[in-house]
Image (cartoon, one colour):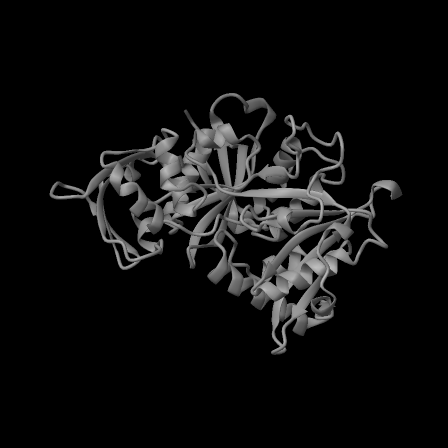
Length: 416
């Protein structure tokens, strides 16, 4: 094996762009588009490029993006894995797996405790230790089905100018830190390049105090034939229930211009309960006897813990549980994660050190993808145990673990 794995050099952008264009052929995404994206993309540039070289030729590439993700109120350093490309002549040889395992080690060395991605095939990334870590319920409904509130709707105004954009960013940051888990700690580059497009618009909800309490970013799907056009809610954030009602009310008022709204709801949002008729249109999805379809389940984000002890030390916990576990992790790619670890839970924190014996309250054994899902809040410990994804020698401890790891289900708007 003569492959080497390393960061890309500036003079290799042309070669990497050619590789990407072969791997992701699409209209309007040729060589020049990829060159610009790899240098000026919204989530990273040359500093994030990782390549595989064999006998002087680049045969593989991906992005190891520098990111911070809010998990349990902590902005954690994570590696965003993007645009994995293998030369057409080198596929089905295990090259992607070897390149990514080398990338894991590189990310660990620079301090990343986890990695996030959107998969081209979930099963491939599950084999590398990633677990599914996010869901959305997608509705496509006429605006009039949303609840109106004439008073709260008056507090919704279009985003116009730098002061409004600053208010929108402040709302996002507070919600990501205090109310949600899974969202990115956005940089100036993210904000500047990820949403300012001609087909997007944004509104803010202003509270009685004069402070912004919520916003929504929508996309005008005017690129479609007239009879199929709709408005798409790309992002919505609120800090108060009044802001939530105001944004719903504003969306409900758009029926004169748009026949339908596409809305992706957080699983815990209860969006279907707000609709006057939650049933999907006839024949849009199969029913089940007297049961009717209401929304489409979307899945996408995946997460992998790269550094078990450091990730657990950063993770804040709920409640006041005190508990000591022996933790054994099955990790085929990163042997340093396997442990066993002594994990002491107290005061909403975890102390982690190698386990060399002595008293523990129980022993927990699980694969890294299951640990990753529990870590980010996508899977409760009881669900892992009942599904055979994890084993604990003292089942009576499961309710205490559930309480400790409880956070809102992960939610992430940013795609990369």
